[in-house]
Image 1 (tube, rainbow, N blue to C red):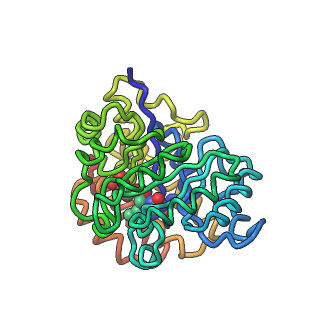
Image 2: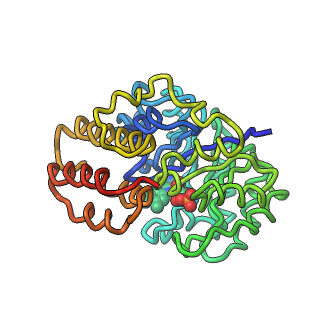
Image 3: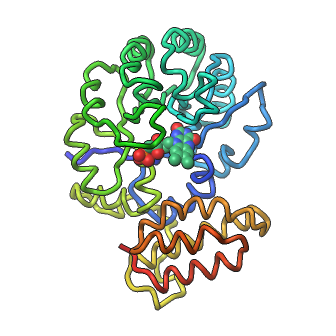
Length: 338
Ligand SMILES: Cc1cc2nc3c(=O)[nH]c(=O)nc-3n(C[C@H](O)[C@H](O)[C@H](O)COP(=O)(O)O)c2cc1C
């Protein structure tokens, strides 16, 4: 029946631990989260893993999968061992990052044209890894045909999951996700398969999920950042209870001290935005450096409102906390949540 699984894709600079925790408190429908990628795990007990981002005291080890960007089997094993020690059950390898400064070093999606390198990396990993290992990738870097020999390599190993975003690295985020190409590949892949790309509405979810049947796991990305209700709406569209997985500690809506917001959606969105900002401010000791991450979020979240470009013009030029706070009040007072 309606047994879909939905995850939130990692976004470097946005979906960090404070974001994930605040998001979970306010919205339902997401089963699984991923950290934005870690890099440079040079030794055991690496300093860059002694951070809140992965600390089990600040994260749910059952529903969070830490991600690494690497091409070095030994580094992957060091990362896996440290994640295991922290209580995590799975790690994910980033083979999808399209940015030239990463891909030019044959990392991220830049590794996809080199199946022999992938084979040698995975043979090292699977000799010794003792927790679940999944991969997130694209169709290729230069060409969507690169995935074919790469799948042959993947099929030799017991991946816990393969997430495919059906674009090529060279495209960055331009053009459309190639859903028909993803569908053609389904029967050639042994690992449990997850679809990722361009799910921005219930309508696009329904259209894409029809084409990629029987795949029933989906990673949401920019669509969920732009419309945090999306996972609930997808589940409601499938006949589920939209708030079924809203956390027990979700903020009671009556706690939002406002009566001038026009509907329930606006009330919830306002509570979420304020909570995230206050949480980030607490973490940053009141520093205006939180504005960067909030603005990055608003570059997607503006689409939850009418007149998004108008909102973006207001938000993007802000560089003081008070200005930001005033702009958010104005947005909620003057704009309608769609
Ligand atoms: C600013 C930005 C940062 C991202 N950071 C990561 C990352 O750290 N790891 C990763 O696997 N994907 C990353 N992604 C890719 C997204 O997780 C997702 O795969 C992509 O946006 C496609 O899905 P969508 O069309 O649903 O947005 C990033 C994307 C953007 C735009």
